[in-house]
Image 1 (cartoon, rainbow, N blue to C red):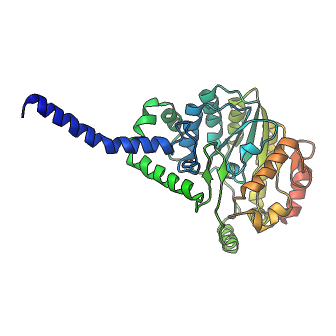
Image 2 (image 1 turned 180 degrees about the vertical axis):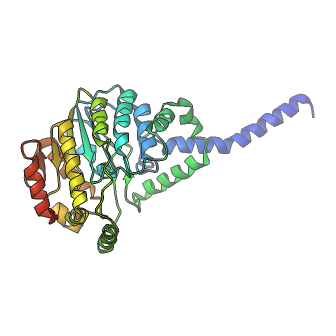
Image 3 (image 1 turned 90 degrees about the vertical axis):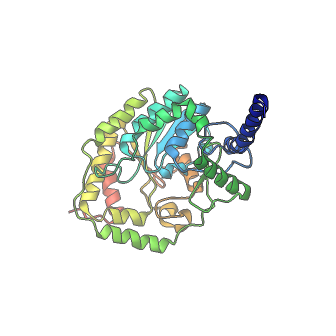
Length: 347
């Protein structure tokens, strides 16, 4: 074999070897489980949120969406689809298990990625967010930001078997229009769920058992107010709408059985009002907080309920029946009403 023939054979072999890799890369790009590209079609319209911190920052840095306001909170806020806002474009930055120390960095990164200074920031303050023993995620926010900003990673991720497995999974769910777990995302960062729900009675019993193991001591986060100030400073020109999560009334009653837990909550609300001026509490008795049909597990509601939360936040509709606007003028009365509602011990 001549040198020329050998080179031709070697080149042909390289081409043949590269064909499978090229096909994998093309498929990964077509489905895009890491949310780095803009393709949107019926075979990738179910996206599994396997790492929401990374995926949503990838979305912000790569796609640079235009929006007026931003919604930030825990996994509960992912079920508040931003398309339900009627008068403003809102980006949903809901992230599973969001720690109080993560709010400010992710708000800053959203502005860094898009250049958008939000007109309004909707901030969920969930029950127990002021707990000093809550663990931070394994990686700090800047690690996710640095990966999202790295243009090389967009393409090296395409040449990855792990990406291929995730892409194949999204492809299958999209074909079937069905996802068997709690939530999947659309390409527009909206949540959909076909999850049938858990055994709610069993979930109640697990929650009751967990409550029985507590002591009447609460590890309050002494830096909670400082973290609130950092959130405020992350968007200094924005209007802040700070609100509670939506909780089942039976879960609230169990949580507040111990006086230390009520005292910790009251302290947190006073600090929230000091920093932001007001706090919108959804801790009231109504069909959404007392009926199982609106919940698919003990702490997560269906997106249709999220629509009602958005309506209340955007328009103020439902004040007194769905939520209470708490400020310095009524904060003590609110606490008295809440104690009566949940049957909390006042001693």
